[in-house]
Image 1 (cartoon, one colour):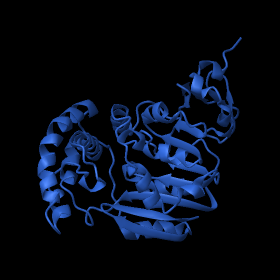
Image 2: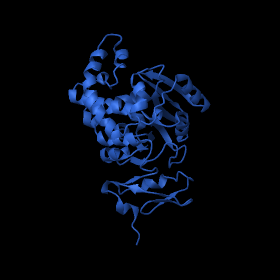
Image 3: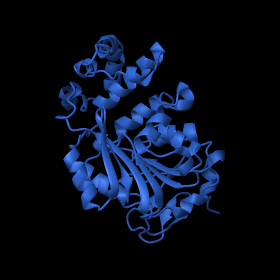
Image 4: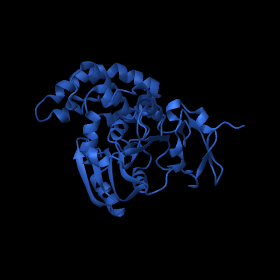
Length: 328
């Protein structure tokens, strides 16, 4: 007798009926469940490990993100920090309210360790979330308590989903780290229903937000993640006090801090010194390690939205980010 897929799942993931909504990324045919997910059309097989369907190989361009988020599984979760930092950022960038998300189908693209997954699930939304890296394991460890969370590992370019299936789409801190940002943005919009709302942010072009880290990345992105992390773990706490002093200089503090290649979260209201150091190490590594980083100019973002005929879209500059929000 063949073992059923549910027999191999952790107890909290035994209810995998939502797998029926998944489709083969290769041919979009339905998948049937055995010990893995098998396409009824082309016969391709997709493993399920620890209750999470996997549609990409272990080795991919998101490797450094998997490394950092499994090290820092809890670091940026509001429930761990004790402050609504992720909640405030999500609602501020999107312009949505928690009440309007309740019961809605939400697609979260690029979950990382699940800091925004937690916030979305707390609204009562039905959340489908994915990441290309094994950061999904960190997300599952933190957020599997939410019964309406559907989590899988996949590439933005080959999602196992039917198009026009979601009421809301959110993608924070992701698309600048993909190989082709325009393709990424336009691909994501295919999964939003007509009339659905979206929020996507992206690093502002270097000419709009220059930073010393841009000079370091050609070297640091080639360093193996464990070795780079060790270097950042040593250097960031030494550079952070200088960055803090510079950030306090009236009127020009924001510009001066860009001369020091260390993440400074003074503006978030973090007061505990150890928490500040931990966030600094995490986000400095996040700056320096990704294989891809492609900041974008505002005019290009406007062109993409116009080409897709997106309605009521706005593009707002928030520090070093452009936030694009609107309706399909």
